[in-house]
Length: 338
Image: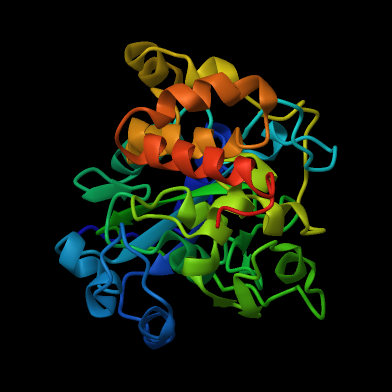
């Protein structure tokens, strides 16, 4: 088992991480943590991730001999505009977090290069990397490692940067001194909670994923009329940033926003459509879900009506959504899918 008593090793690792583009890197012990287990056991359990709390809190189960967990944050705030969230005519919203390059690969590559650096510092070190690809909860390890504090909307807020960060972990058998978790600095601010259009937050850290538009955009389950109406109103294709955009700790860049043309995307042949999303984090859920989302985003666009009529004659998620959109337009336009 590699050990080090050299006090400069953690700083060397953090300096290397900064050169690789991490805005923060912290160290957490790999030993089980009662508070982390409590948080995982008491939270709603959305799909797509393993939810055995004991396993998610046991790095030794993921890497035999694990001693430390390195949690890193890579910023993407430069992808955001300082302008208010406002859908342009005929455009849909693709959240910048999911744009090109796909952060799963982008962050994993940085973590792998940092892992190689661990080997340079301590030959024989073992490590494994995860970015939304393993049992560890990135947010809770980032919290435990002092990368940032957990906001009332559950996102990790990195001091001086905000919550527009991708998180990833390195689990290693290299024993390193842990960092101190940060106290919450949200005080009495609840702008993030009040910004959610669908009231997915019942209070601080009280989150109901079944009321979250970001979750609706990934589900293959039939959407309720009120869910369709909300997604159409906001023109969402993938991702929802209302609670983060309201946070006063978040930096933003000079980007013009990510508003793809709905008609253009809906008319794309299958191969071209897949290629458009190929290097994004949105494609993982499949073209059928994305086309369904596009149909809903285009519900109020007269320019897209002929395309929606074409979809309505087909089968699948997008066809069902198109029929609902067209039926709604025949009644009280754009306001209801009943």
